[in-house]
Amino acid sequence: MAKELRSLPGVNKVLTDERFSRMAKEYSHDLAVSVIREELERQRESIQAGKSGDFLDVIVDNALERLAAIFTPSLRRVINASGVILHTNLGRAPLSDDALKAMAVAGYSNLEFDLDSGSRGQRHVHVEDLLCRLTGAEAAFVVNNNASGVMLGLSALAKRKEVIVSRGQAVEIGGGFRVPDVMRQSGAKLIEVGTTNRTYSRDYEEAITPSTCALMRVHSSNFKLVGFTSEVALEELAAIAKKHNLMLLDDLGSGSLLNTTAFGLAAEPMVQQSVKAGASLTFFSGDKLLGGPQAGIIVGEKQYIDKLKRHPLARALRIDKTRLTGLAVTLMHYLKDEAVAKIPIWRMIAAPLKDIEKRAGIWAKACGAKVIDGETMVGGGSLPGGSLPTKLVVLPGGSALAKKLRLQTMPVIGRVEKDHLLLDPRTVLPEEDDIVIKALTSLAVK
Ligand SMILES: *Cc1c(COP(=O)(O)O)cnc(C)c1O
Image (cartoon, rainbow, N blue to C red; front, side):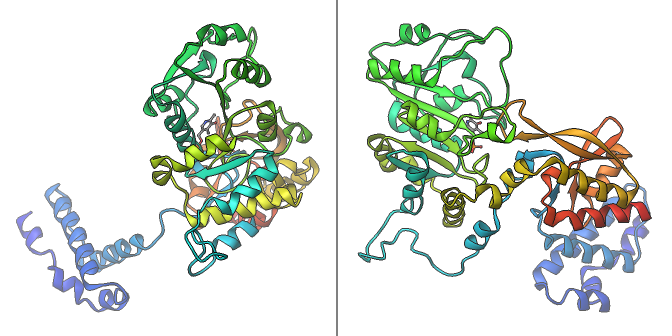
């Protein structure tokens, strides 16, 4: 072992190796030295574990591979053939071409600069008017994501006061976002009323004390209470809030600007309805059914939005210029009535089954697979149980095949069920079909 260890090349020997220095010349000397040290350390450990060390050639190869790996972006594009449209692990909503183009602007911007007066401006003005026009709200504000929007709202308006929530809505929404925890973090005191499955308006009324400041509804996005259940409608909550001079806060989670029932889906609460029903503030995500970049959108009464804008947390939770630009363009798609044609998630939701069937047939042909009926999930904590009919390409080979497709230059992500790999064309845009077909063809050849 000692002899093997001694025969390992030194750092300099690898560094000056003709092939290494030629291939690594675009990298800094320090980086090259550090990857060589890492590789030699691994060689030492392997020899000490009783294995034999590699020759210089192999060490050079490994060091070069280590260098290449550093410069291979870890976060990259994948093809989502999983059949879940808003897949949180896959980055939720893909963006429209127009939004992406707008986000790629070079140079400076008037992010917080009023071009008219030449003085300091505010970043939210770039979307506030659009949001008000679309939702009918008086005012709007945008932060980093919806969880931070709710946190800001409660911190600014409900600190040390009581907020009444139905027990059936005080839930974990996914990714560890627990409504009760977020409320506690904000300093608001959560008062849970009703039972898990049934809550009546008298439950809210009886819980009101002089310390109560708000009633809150949380859309139970990712699960559905079925059977013997009862929830109080937002309109009713608004009436109670008004009678007792309380705020009504509505966390919609996904929130949709389009009527999902028009696409054969279950009804997802619409932002416009929430505003109209009398919510003081309505909270929703930018990257769920809106189909835009990650953002937390808050719309509602100006007196409350103004308080949020002035709160110190607003600065900590602010959204960046790139996403703000993408959000504005996404909102314009709705105002121009072109959301279904331009926003990827709506294109997927609206895609006719016969088009999907045709594409599934072409995919299946590329690899000799079968096509079966299936369902696409909307996902992303919206529309619990909400699904659309689809056609799935079924491949035998389950998780081993799934891995092969994941490790392609452009990873294709499917869904493994039992011993089969399922691929859903509905969550893949037709422009991406060539990539999938190429991947499937290469599998068939191997
Ligand atoms: C998804 C969701 C959130 C969190 O939204 P993010 O944008 O992921 O922060 C909060 N509340 C509800 C009801 C949700 O569905």
